[in-house]
Image (cartoon, rainbow, N blue to C red; front, side, top):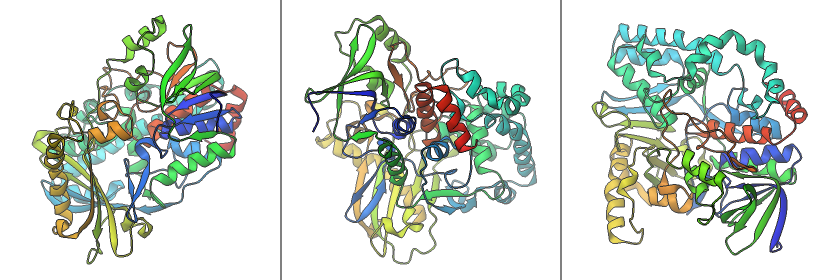
Amino acid sequence: MTNATDTTEILIIGSGIGGLSAAALLAHYGHRVIVCESHSLPGGAAHSFQRNGYTFDSGPSLISGLGAASSNPLRHVLDAIGETVPCHTYNTWGCCLPEGDFNTTVGADQFCDVLDRLRGADAVRQWRELQVAMKPLAAAATAMPPAAVRLDPGVVLTAGRYAANFLPHLFDTAKLTGAFAPIADEVVFDRFVRDWLDLLCFLLSGLPASGTSAAEMAFMFDEWYKPGVVLEYPVGGVGAIVNALVRGLEKNGGELRLDAHVEEILLEGDRAVGVRLRGGEEIRVSKAVVSNASIWDTLRLFSEKSDSPKVVELRRDRGELPQCESFMHLHLGIDATGLEDLQCHYIFVDDWERGVAAEQNVVLISIPSVLDSSLAPPGKHAIHVYTPGNEPLRMWDGLDRRSEAYAKRKHERSQIMWKALARVIPDIRERVELELVGTPVTHGRFLRRDRGTYGPALEAGKQWFPAQNTPIPGLWCCGDSTFPGIGLPAVAASGTIVANSLTGVGQHLAMLDAIGV
């Protein structure tokens, strides 16, 4: 039990991967931290949940860089807090494309075999030339880890230790700030290869190559197209990552409060001094409030009566950021009899001509029980099918989830996922024992995401993501509203930057020494 008024040093709103990364690092640094999560489960869009003996992931399923030493910022957080996430590894995934159905692997050489079969030697040559062009950019993108970044003058010391790595790549670094498309334009002309690159970009950022930053693609090339690379799936589900971060928080004295819905960020003058929870309890802070909510949801946490110039500034600068579209989800428990040759992941593209970002044109299929039998009852499979950021928000605005109109639209908009899954398991409908359908309304309800969006849709080279600090003293933000890229590495990086900025340079340097990056 807590008193009507509580105090802490730092309070974090939301327990997504960004918020938990910040919280676990801050607790590691010795700060008193409370995380308030509105949901009954931690993890935000990355939480796992159970139904009828099945374990399902609510969000991301394509993961790499957690096992072996890597440039993944999430791996750096786990190293810093002394936690590990055991993973199953695999390198093959299935493709259901207009050209046909086939398996491919991560790593450059095998994809060249696919290109040679589908498009011929010239497409292979172009792909090889792109690899050569991306190699120095990948070196530049990984020359300075996000773990070294902080938003104060101390960055001279923390980032300065990587100057010898970074300075040789200054010319390439300039290219990283722009879009990926101009780089690909120089060497890639084959239509299929361009479509494939657009697809990879869309999965990384929610935008095609023309809007995805070169830095994101450089990071991906470094992770996916190198010798011996593997993809990973956490033992026990993606929720195992959440659990590791919670362990890191709690073992250092931090506190996670579930079912603790923040209704208002409290101000004294222009400074954020705490929060008010549903039910009236207040938690005051001596140092900072950190919001892991989206920027649109964060802005709602200020009283409408507030006339603070700093709140007005924040609303003006960030309230009109364009939003990514949302997801449709299909979670299934099925009879697995006779399905011995499935891959863990498949990607489905309906029509290249429509463009990868077209609504319901791309579908991802995750069958993690292929790797981890604990996720489903014996003889069963747990399946997660989703449309990755291509479900229009406008179709769901104003719909009551209890209405007949909502149920009808939910059924209609789920059919593309069944179509994609039938390419992999033709008799899928006869095998289903459990079916759950999620919509943007579901995201809005359970993940507290404005309209169900998955973050800002900011085009590289034209628009910039806002930093983690804000005009309001004592208020910081982390998560996908503050760092480019949709996914675990990006949000972990955002949380790391916040934690570093709120602690001393000496402790920050000691952390970098400890993780050896």
